[in-house]
Length: 169
Image (cartoon, rainbow, N blue to C red; front, side):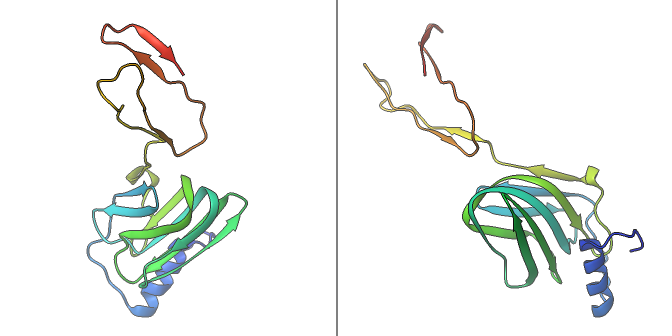
C-alpha cells in the first residue's frame, strides 16, 4: 500500500487484486471481543483481515475456521496472530489450550485499508468473577467462589446487614 511496512494490509490488498474483489460495504468501525476462549469481531461492514499480538498463559493452541488463511508465532508468553479471509471475518479464533490474558496490539483491515485505531475498540472479559454465597442465609459460615483470570492480590471484605465490617480475608 506504499507505507513501507509489509503487514496484513498488504496481504489483504494482494489477495483482493488477485481475486479481482470489489467490496461496497467496507467496515469503518469494529469491536474486538475477547471472551474466555474465543476472539470475535463485531463490525459495521466487511472485515478481510486481522493482525493481533496477545499475551497468554499455559500451552497456547489456537483453532481457526476452515475458510481462513491464518497462522500464529509464539515468542515467550506472547503470540503474533495473522488471519486473512475471502469472506467477512467475524469469529477470529478459538483457544483450545492455554488462555489469552490480554490483547497488546490489534490491526483490523477492511478490503483495502486498516481501520483507524480510534474506530477499533477492544472488549476484554472481567479479570474476576464472584459467585453467590451459599448457603444463604447462613449461620455460622458460608462459601463464596472467586475466579481470577489474571494474577492479582485479592482482599475479600465481609459486611453484615448493618454495614459493619465482619471479616477480611
